[in-house]
Image (spheres, rainbow, N blue to C red):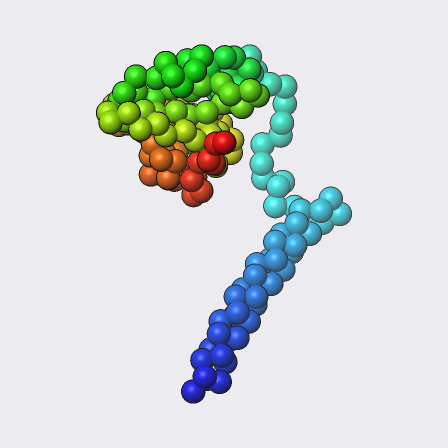
Length: 162
């Protein structure tokens, strides 16, 4: 009976490898179809790129300003100078050396500290006092005060601090 179970497991793994191999072949075939020596190029129907209009440049800058602003937050000091200044029921970002810590003190006085870096892409977290959680402004991940993930796209909890 155990041999039959092992056969099913091997079949599942083999099937998954076959699926991955088929996807890889399709991707390579798609890249080959876009080579310059191909007479019928799929990209031939796309509009030709011309000079960028001022509106397009402004839109590009607006779209990327959020990311630049978010990563610039790593350079500024924390919201509080020490976790000792944190009042019960509040959360804040505190600088500890070169890193920033997401600190929360519950009503009972218990202090929770985690890394202030989102585990999805590394953006700087903000305290959400309305929902009592940490929010990532880049893609909307939410983390509980103990660092566990509440909403995706992040799937890993916040790193513990020393």
